[in-house]
Length: 407
Ligand code: HGY
Ligand code: MN
Ligand code: MN
Ligand code: MN
Figure (cartoon, rainbow, N blue to C red):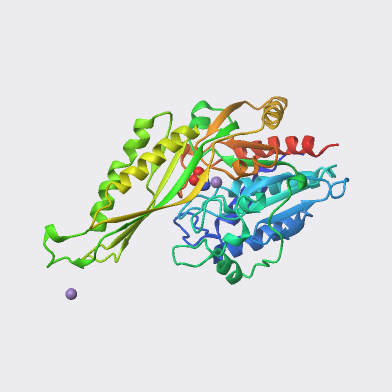
């Protein structure tokens, strides 16, 4: 039996209802009320699919289908279930649902794998609340539990406190020894136009860009908008605005597909009649080669510090740095061959988006496939992927997982 489009779509629709912004996309931040609702739903679904449910110490959810080989390394299939603010119903969720549907197909076909199969739903891939790729980084050890008290959200709440508030059992282990993993497989929406434009239903990802994210603080002096002469001002927002308008040029000049984005901006005290005394903004830099990421990063730091003077102070914190990744040839070939066997056209692709797969690629074999995004849209309420495209991707994952869980 093959993947069931309606069963898949139902899960997508149900999950998308757990949002803080109904009618305006999916907003499901880590450890929020919406996270807890989605968490319960995912765990219930895993149980209904005959999986043994376990939640790790930071809230990553596992559903395990035991293999004939007890305590053998697992093939893990899944993605993240957090979202960007006002995001779409498919980013991350499609990969979690794909993992669930793969498990359902093992059940439908009464197939007991030799090696265990684990479905995973991870937290905080987007970094919309704390830090990008945080769930998978906890599992692989590239982020340590003793840093959780230092990582805080925009309201100053730490990961530690947020986990406690969410009622998580933080005594559960988080880190997984690589010997417990045979492979990690992820299906993700492409979030770009390539597959739709080329009319090819499956992308087999061969590499993922390197990326770094910075938090920049610009400090000036608050003052009265009406009584402070223009030549006596230390206006943090004007200084930040000049920096921000100058930054994109660095990526354009670097070329090679490099990109730079300023996505977040907070102004303090954010009042119409007060000269801003501080501004925080983020910088997201990406490129397929690490040298370009580093070039842009260094030039951005120089540019920002060039505004540092007796009136304006600047501070830069690096919140994320991950090197470009080339994914495992063996699994890429397996995925491409499976597409051929299923008579599905596929194409090799590079990813401009970061994914949990890039974190797992440090510790185990990894496969990542893309399915088409309508109009190439993502990170917005309009994000959409047709259920038949999702089902096709699941069939590829299922056949590949079958091979990887065989003796
Ligand atoms: O930012 C990204 O590339 C991903 O959507 N987290
Ligand atoms: Mn994603
Ligand atoms: Mn995303
Ligand atoms: Mn006043």
